[in-house]
Amino acid sequence: MFNDSKHGFDAAQTGYEAFMLAPHDWVPNNRKLPVVIYRRALAPASGNLASEFEILFERNAWPAQWRNSIFDFHHFHATAHEVLGVTGARAEVIVGGPGGRVVTLHAGDVLLLPAGTGHCLQSFERHFQVVAGYPAGQQWDIRREALTPGELAKMQALPFPPLDPVDGKQGPLIEHWLHAA
Image (cartoon, rainbow, N blue to C red; front, side):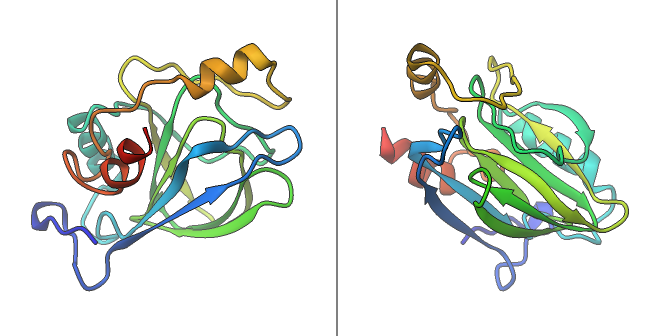
């Protein structure tokens, strides 16, 4: 559980889920780092969520690089970890590759995907949009096929970000990711 009144967090309604995904077919997922879903990281009615997520991610060294939706085809990023802040509406996203786990995301939620984690937009309400951020110094790619052994080794050696994209010096990234090292 996290709580930060300056960002509209409500301790009674916020929290996070963390879960591991095994490799699946051509999608490597991440053997060491869990996916994290922050529920109500920002209050949906707090204003301009896109700008608020950009400010939050930038402050925590996960600069936002784009605003849009999530691709509706299975893919993953081998060269960067990714954080997605949901700025509007609701969607179902498949994480883990074809046949993976379906998660429902709402405005104000954040999805933290370690490098290699497959994801695909399954269904969405009108006006669904996310802000995407990546750790400073990491450049994302789009992968739709299996990695070579060398590419997999590079992905697994990606550095851990020093700050949680939502909670900074504490939070699930620090708790789960840095302790996995």
